[in-house]
Image 1 (cartoon, one colour):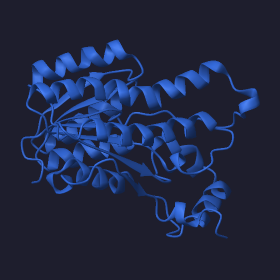
Image 2 (cartoon, helix red, strand yellow; image 1 turned 45 degrees about the vertical axis):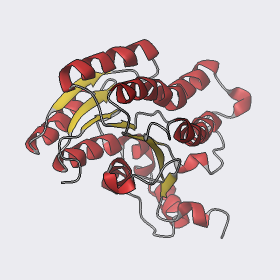
Image 3 (cartoon, one colour; image 1 turned 45 degrees about the horizontal axis):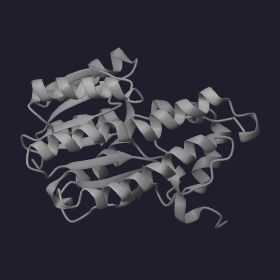
Image 4 (cartoon, one colour; image 1 turned 135 degrees about the vertical axis):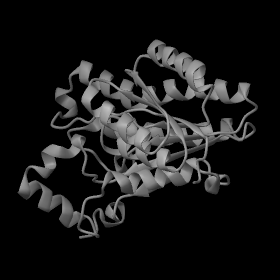
Length: 256
């Protein structure tokens, strides 16, 4: 097991990528603090999977866009787990169908707060915690291929993910002396509750799959394995990097 006795915080762990990552981390020996926003049933399922693997699950309800709430969550993690070795900032919010000219300010602010400021809010106390414990540790942000590709009618989503890529690069330089690795995973089309509407529309799904060279959607486990690598000792010399996991989508864009 490559994460034996490590302690990880995984945000947005009630379904999809976060849930798969929590389960995989537990199977690899880590105790996990797992957060959710509203899906209580989903987080209970995640906790059950973690505990079935023989590891501890600390469940926290959290709005990552609320800095005070994030700090309070870290207080609980510190007291109940004794600290953290790994942060996986996975929680995010999707949007579509809103051209910039018709943009609702509340939607714009919410997407940027959850998808961009939220990971920053989670990284700040993690850095302090790791410095207090002598340095070292891993931060993995979960971004999207939207940080590289155009996102018409969902510009704030693309903005937030591009900003997350920039945060990863900047923070990797800031934290190099602390030996805290900072990396980013950019998923393509993954079959999760966030993308469920696309999978319910056959014509839309077929069009999406045609653009992907592997002609299939990814599964949450595909991303969880990438996150595991970046959170492990095997990635000690990797920092400031965005690992794209998309079946070749970004290589195909505009090619046909």
